[in-house]
Amino acid sequence: MKFIHTVHDYDVKLFVNLINSKSYHALSKLARFISRTGDGHLYLLLMWSIYMTEGASSPFLNALLLAFCIERPLYFLLKNSFKRNRPQHSIKGYKSLVTPSDQFSFPSGHTSAAFMVANIASFFIPALFFPLFIWALCVAISRVVLGVHFPTDTLIGMLLGISVSIYSLTKVVI
Image (cartoon, rainbow, N blue to C red; front, side, top):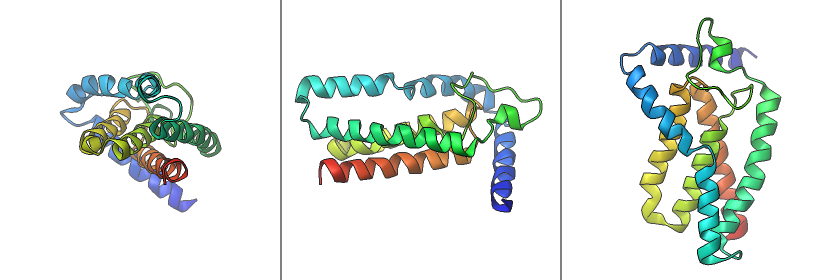
């Protein structure tokens, strides 16, 4: 428990330094837009586009579908097992810039899904590797800037997304 408390204290210090920085206000406007790109609408559009161009037997589509079927339940299980409070419930007097979709913060589902999709899409379209991973990283940062996650929430979300994507790719493609 001491380790978890130490990590939480470190997270709070990082978070407070961010929200007190001079660039926080400018970052928050951009963060709203970037965060919305990870809400899920683009993932559905991507899967629909793949289905329409490649059909239901597409390895790309099947890797994404399998990954989401694994990642979403794992994400909900972790979130509801750890029950880590979001920053606005952990830092007295702080209010997040957006209303989170649920009560708990660990791990970040937006980050997990963004890294998962970025990794799978990069496997099938290698030229998109850097733009997709920069986008996924921006989604992760945006969740912290908006005040709905601590840095380690996004770090674990990233690890979850990448792990599930690798597993899904090995089951569908390799």
